[in-house]
Length: 171
Image 1 (tube, rainbow, N blue to C red):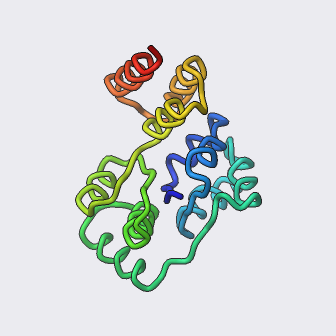
Image 2 (image 1 turned 90 degrees about the horizontal axis):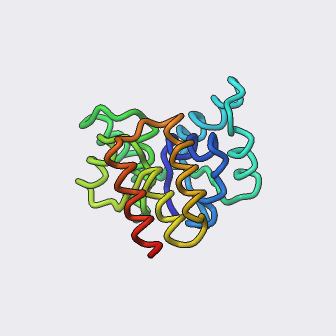
């Protein structure tokens, strides 16, 4: 089980690889703000991949959870101490209180998560994990990384490092 912020969900859905998250983590939890950012807003603009997000909700492995009072308090504290948007603070609060890993791309959100002791990874890290655990072959990994760059800026050094790790792991 993992908590996800909006960006990784949107990117995985747009490249047709959302199901990898089910294969990797079995269940993906999101808060109400992230649901609004991904599914509700996506439906309004007919966003690419929104139907995958809806199907994942219907299948039950993508779940919207209510924040507890402890999570809401932490969300407010994080919001007051950072420039993160509400979806990111919501995701960090959920992961922190529930002691779950966090899937998030935003650099500042990753820093806040690290400072709070929350294990986290981004879209590209989850994709590499999917490869390492046998859910993608090397060719599909390479194609998916290329597809992701159409929707998410990735540092060329990060792309090179992920592909190097994957190719070395193949030997």
